[in-house]
Image (cartoon, rainbow, N blue to C red; front, top):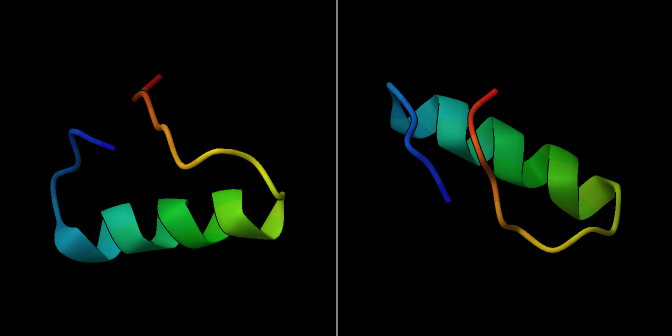
Length: 29
């Protein structure tokens, strides 16, 4: 997960992915 500029940004992204029922593996675009 990451990189993110802030913890809040990372948590928001993780929450969005959980809601979509996807693995919490995040890449910045």
